[in-house]
Length: 86
Image (tube, rainbow, N blue to C red):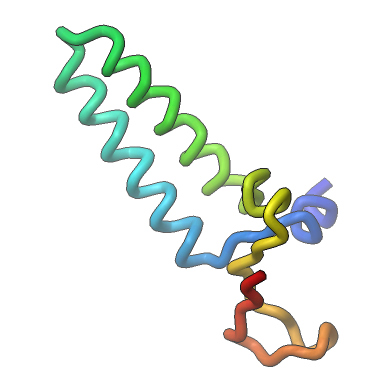
């Protein structure tokens, strides 16, 4: 299973970290604005998506658009640290 997720991953470690941090910030904001239920729910849903994509390293929108921020390895013709953008 981990090998499958590794092959499917299309996010760089930096991308994953930013998504995770933003997800946590949105959870906190959702708690702060809990008086406005609609806004809080929207913030929680967006936060959940960001956190799940950060944990899995896979973004479905990136996949549809053919984008990857993940570095190519030497075996794929790239050099470490080189990211492919569509």
